[in-house]
Every structure is written in structure tokens, then in C-alpha cells.
Image (tube, rainbow, N blue to C red):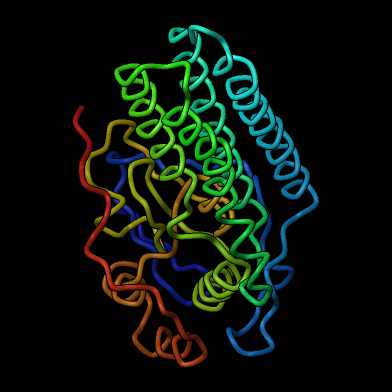
Length: 289
């Protein structure tokens, strides 16, 4: 059955029942303070007090995990590596634990940054806040790796074994600590204002498996078969908090072809926006049941 309803913002919303359930997520982050045209004087996105509190909690936990990782490194350097002979089992266990703590902290830190991102205007803070996980991983592993290979209480085979394990785990911790697509206040502001000017409200749609979010629930990308059979709706900030990187780059084509908006409405929005997001192919590849 097809149900068509004209909403107050001048678009026709068509949805096919019986396919995928639309689920409204619990608000976890902030919206722009007010709606309006996407222009130079458009409202700047700011997180709600609840979002900032949650981000602060996540950062404190991440910081605690990182401190434990560095403490484990110090124990390995100043006690384990000074034993004769070196307890290889204990050393390898410590390397694994340090890696797990560093990675766990980085994942929580990244989640916090999605709730409360930095501004690109402050270049130093933007870099440090988004790449701190990788920096901590370097601190937690580089001195340890150097001292393993220069240790006089280990033979060549022991150095090779412990060193390779430390390099592999440390390299993984660094790679997972890097934020390759860091969020920013400017990105959230542009996306929120784009959606609000087009639709009249800050509401977007995504699926669990996708990496981007969309203008409406009728686009093909969110209606492909998925394991949970659900489409999620929420604010732009909610979508980012759910792990979605950005608004799909071809949102303008989706709006015209699937969401009931006219080219004139889309042109009115794009006339006041600029975006350096790369072009991408359709998202949301089907999941296996």
C-alpha cells in the first residue's frame, strides 16, 4: 500500500509500508540552536549540555585507559626489561594489555568527538583533539619497542619475538587512533542548516550498515535489505553519534528524485552552501541475513 501525505513544507512524502521499519533514535546530541537559511549568518551548531556531559564522561574514561596503558609501559620498561632473565610471557602479556587499553581509549575518544567536535578555526586544537589517540599510542609503544631491541638481557630470538609483537600491536593501535575523517563544528553546522532549509526540520535517515545519512526515508540506499530491517531517523548530530560520517554527497539528487522536492527548492539551498565533501557512490550495501 502506498500512503502519500503532503507536509507543511511543500513536499510530498511517499513511503511503502511493509518493507522496513522507521525507528526514531533517542536524542544523544545537539541540534543547531535555530533554523534558517544556509548563509554566512546561519546559526552555528552547538552541542546540548547533555551531549557535552556525555562527551566529557567518555573522554575521562578514555584518559583513564590511556593512563593505565602508559603505566603498563612504564612497568614493562623499568621492571620487566631489567630482570635477568626477562620474563617473556609477562612482557608479551603486558604488550597485549597496553595495546587493548590504548585502542579502547581511542575508540571512546572518537565517540566523544562526534558528540562534541572541535572547530577547524582552531587548527592546533582541531588536530590534537582528533588525533590524540594516535599520539598516545606512539607514546605507549615507541619507547618500549626501542628498549626491547636494545635490551642486553634478551637474546636475538627473544628481541625479535617481543619486538615484532609490539610493532604489530602498536601499529594497530596507532592506525585505530587516527581519525581519518574527523568531525568539525563547521561540518555539523553546514549539514544541519542544509537539511533544515530544505525540509524545515533537522531530521535525517540512515541504516546501521551505512556510513552516511540521507534526506528522507524513501531513498533506495536506506531501503535495501538489511539484517535488522530498520531505517533510523534523528537529527544530524544523532546520525554522527551513531557513527555516520556525513550527509551523502548526492543529497541534492536524492531530494529531487526520491524525496518529493523540486529542483528549484534544492537550488535555493545549494546557492547558499559550499561543500568540499568528495563524490561517492550509492551506500548501504545489503547485509547478509
